Image (cartoon, rainbow, N blue to C red; front, side, top):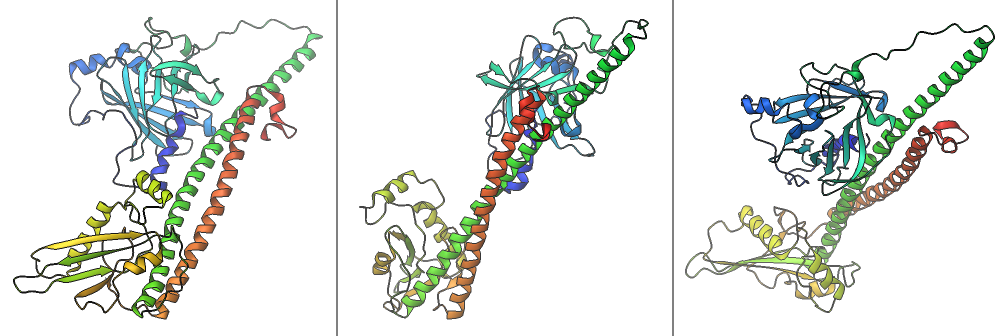
Length: 489
């Protein structure tokens, strides 16, 4: 089942490299200390209650396989009997599980929850149906809804589904790779769920009884042999088509994981490029400003520049006030912009939810000043103000001119997001400016390379979607979908 197998999505936890955020799902947390207490008598009784667990009553202690990836195996075990089940996914040849899910019961009988581990874990809400099947509705961004049911022949089927508020709307057509057959015999003390609520059904576990063959005339043998050969060839073609469809599905999944990785890399490259360009322009501007020259930097409305000032009243009676000001920073503080006539800037300010609101910038700058040790003694009082302007020309007009006030200390703050100051400001040398220029050029090249990688990943993902559709159609018996080059087309 492709939808259920997004469990490679757990790999995204490594790819994203994100930490410290809340999980992106909306289900209650599993019971605490599952392995620290023994199951109660009620837990043991509930473990066999189909109204609570549905088909999961029969799964702990068993495993099932599908032809996906030339052999995908699911294993179940009780984490705590009657309370929670672990579901582990293995692919052929792997020692460790590709992914695991924890499935636990809700407060109401028949309500189940499932979640994969990790920060960006996928989550589902499950509902046991009258026939023992379970509908799992996605409760996180990457989790697709699906149905988990026992087929009449005893195979476990995991089929993509459209579910609205716990009610089944539609089911996708079952594929060979969506069917998981038993590799271990269901424990004798547990009834089968092939027919929920009925007595033990062992038909699926019994070998098929074939009637004894009857003698065939010599004239009929060639025709019978030809028919058997044709049937064997057709079965082989169907098996090959099903295997290729499973492979195409897995390649489609991998292509989209690569696409997600490329998007993340592009985002990081853009941030790095913007920062390098900002640092370069800041060095050029401050080198000119400290020499009372006009900076050779192109700037127009919408190219935001900011700076912050920190002041103290003194260290006691008779002490003179002191001030500190940062360098000009080619970034925007998302306050109501000046001049207020910039409608686009005003709209962006109202919609902004990022890290550079006035409060956030003020807090970071105040903490950075305190950590710097610039004011070694506790001042009688302090004031702090940060400013942002829609162009360099306006920012320079308001920026304190170096040398005008001997009480003013000039500080280096490379970015509004930095938690620390980079020291006291001195006139940037040409060597420092050249180095910043090289860094900016390198970051720009990396950004362009990431854009190209993103475009190629988008193309591959689009092709993989079409290939998977054709392979599935071919496996379903649509000859035209197999193409002139066979099912590999």
